[in-house]
Image (tube, rainbow, N blue to C red):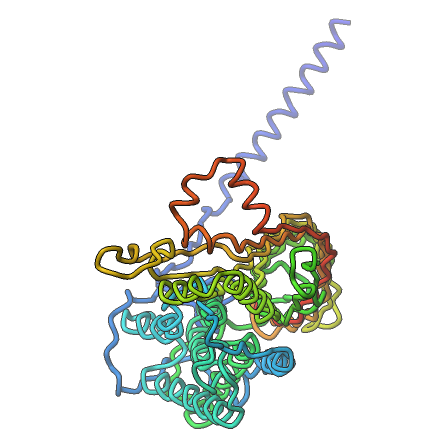
Length: 556
């Protein structure tokens, strides 16, 4: 056994010595290991507009410098000339046509000596808001923020757009000779303020919305839409005027740029549009602003015969103005969740009848007096007027729900939605005013002069609607025309059931004439008088509303 151990030990020692010798020899023959390091050179790089995708990144971009070179032409490298009609969307056509449709629905409010239209909403902001677009463009340009064009090309495009708009608007205005709702002049259709605002919005959209950020476009078109709405609320224009003005403004702005693209070609271009069209159809999440015309339930009646009126009160709805802000986030190309905020203002036809009944009440009171009392009344009352404070039923609505998208091609898709929301109504109001000397002083002599001058105003008639739950749906056709931008034509349907309450009060006239007598009444006598000279009635009405309109959307 010991012999075997010795033999195995000797064999292992021999093998180890040979392996060591082999390794030593090979090690001596190995070449020195070297590592080749490539030469590296630090350089600043830049991304041109052609390589731009989601957000602007220009490592070489200098700090913006104020630009006052109004007459100096310059062209940045790597900008590509636009083709004639390259960016024409014709999105203004549906709005212009909607205005023509709404035109047949309007009925000019006829001013009469015995009543006036003095709405509570009065603002001069629309006189300035119409210039927001060009003011923003000029401000950004002066600050050195490069847009699409240099100064000469920008001024030419803007001048061409405003010139086309002025020619179209004024030609139509003074040919159609439509009376304004306040009865001031016969040049209502289309709205010049709104057309001016939408040319400016298109200017901001072309210069900065398409080349830098879609939110410039949203700001421009949002303010332009608000300008149109204020023109209606200020009682200066009908909804038909505003819709047609918006359509003409957009078409004029686009045509101005198309013509200058033909004339200037590649000269004077500083930036191209955000290149490539994101697949808006497959990634349909959006934020939009829209304007439309509303139709639906046409009228409602109040039974006034039980209050001494000769007939029922019939109020008829006309076409309404609808303005919305809407957005949705899509989980995939087909389904998402979102919401909508909408303001819809509906003018009412039938005010003349209300005023006529008011004067029937005045005549009834006058005829109930003795002859000497009638003479004293005529002497003591200087003026009686019925003032329409609000001639629109205005609805504020908020909705949330599910949105659907069905791609049809790379540029077109069908959309739909199911919404649940809340409807809040603003009242419809007619006030009465009376001024003069107090009637209880019958004589007008040095010993017994007439009473102090007075002016009384009270709520003669108003209609209110309760807040209610509403349901909505709709269908839309989306056209994707640029990176992050799309246009939609839509028809929305909304349903709500409301309780409308009519309050009528003629007794306010007496409180102004006989203040001393009314001050001495007991609470019970005051209640009896109120019951005899006022009325209140409620009706429940299912309201069906259709809105036809167009939306400008940014997609994300």
